[in-house]
Length: 374
Ligand SMILES: *Cc1c(COP(=O)(O)O)cnc(C)c1O
Image (tube, rainbow, N blue to C red):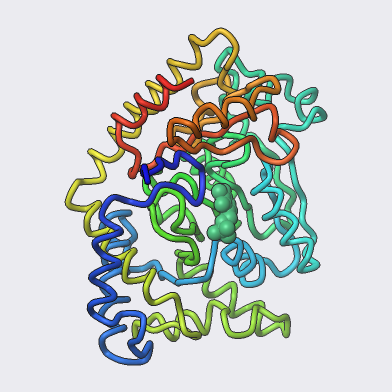
């Protein structure tokens, strides 16, 4: 059987070393070890340490292991919002974050950067129609209501291919230093550069940019977020049962987790992060930039298939969305014959867009092969 190449946005192509690590893990009986024993603590310690070293997470930040990124949204809302949160919506995943706040009966306020109402108000807000570099300061000029405790956003929107520059996020935080800020980086990690001193909560899962099997989420929070969780709990509001910031922190301190975690995936994550450190994050990012350039240039020059996000400042380097005018099915069929799998558009864009992942696991030769196959 010919091996397929997965340019899907998640789950995606696994990192090349995953197979070797899975075989080794089975040899070492990793799936059978006790999650309260010293061997697991050592694995968790290694994974935590590699996360800190690769992503530049300071010792003052706490790293929690969850089951997925949606759980990250839920824990953030429960532990960091007593009454009100503010959501910057750029697509389906940021909408989900907003919906999570509503589900937990928080007063959630949202602003959709892709809605027609906002388009009119700020003229050129939608990246799709932004062509004159007019995105400047859209994020940092947002007016956020006084009662809002948490600003929530999806740094890289996997559904629309809109990526919010980190500098804009820092500027917003500087304008509202007393508010907490939480970002979803599921499909931009490890590419996105994050100053963890400026962001109160960051979360992701591992089946996208990190090239691992699904079923593991990571949440990084600072002391301010922990205190907020305590505050809310003290007020008598539920912050979650087995997984709240308090229980996660207590266990993290002894390199454990409250429930039996995805031990195998925590092991694999530690190993893959170690491999990425050996390659160097600088090289990984440079390669992603080079591949993104190839992909965008190809579609910018294509007669029919055009990138969905026009303004380069808002273009995701890791999840590239292309308009197909109803040709998605045909394209996917054609690529499948060559052993290449990509994602269709998200939701109601399923027939009119395609989505191409550009993660560390994707080799430049395979990107060239992909572009030759259209
Ligand atoms: C995939 C994705 C999620 C959901 O991740 P799960 O691991 O399935 O919970 C959330 N946010 C973004 C931006 C995503 O791409």
